[in-house]
Image (cartoon, rainbow, N blue to C red):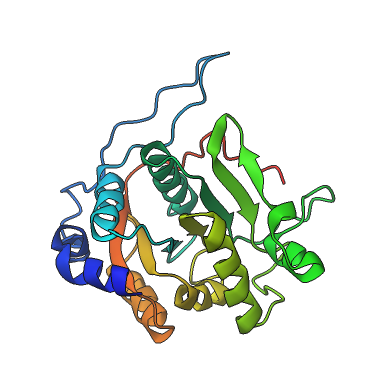
Amino acid sequence: MGLFQRLHSTNKAIIEAVGTLGRAKVPLISEERPAPPVPGGNPTPALRIPELVQLFHAINSLNARDQPYILQFIGSVPGEGVSTIAASFVEIAASQRTKQILLIDCNPASGAATQPPSLIDAFHETGSIDAAIRTAADHQRIKLARLSTAEDARLGIDAADLRRLLELAAKSFPVIVLDCPPAIQAPESLALARYCDGTVIVVAAETTARSVIDQTKRALERFDANIIGMVFNQQKNYIPRWLDRRD
């Protein structure tokens, strides 16, 4: 946790985003929309949000020993674009590193009969997580996995095993990103914070009430979350084509 504690205390440019909640007309995120996909061309990139590039490089600059880290992205209510922001950060990280990046979908499963095993399933059955990890389409350095196949917030794993699972993942992936469901719907998202080196709160600009954001922040802090900043999402929800949600 030392790396992210230093980030919290030294990188005020990111942390001070918390103080701009009342200034919604000053965008913290570029309003540029992604270009439409070109048939037969390269996959449409995720959003290149300046604050996420800044966050990635701020972490990198303090990570002199290249320690692996787990970063949680979470919103307060549905529709804030957490998956969009998490995917964008992963794509930025993958473009800046030669090693593979793991994006873990922590949202409730769809219930589809053909879905691959989750990390928790694979860990319980084999003691390994390899069977649950797949490569993103056209992005060899981005790996995808689902945390649980449960259709609700219950994970079906005890705290000690979950910690061991994430430690196992960190041996293979220097950057692990958790795409979490909103705090108001999934208390397990709050509990996941204690296993992460840092938490980023995603806010739908001009939509989410300040009181709701404050409530989420306090709830995360009760679970020892290390909140390193907020990202104000003014984009329409956009999921890049490499992030296949059909499972």
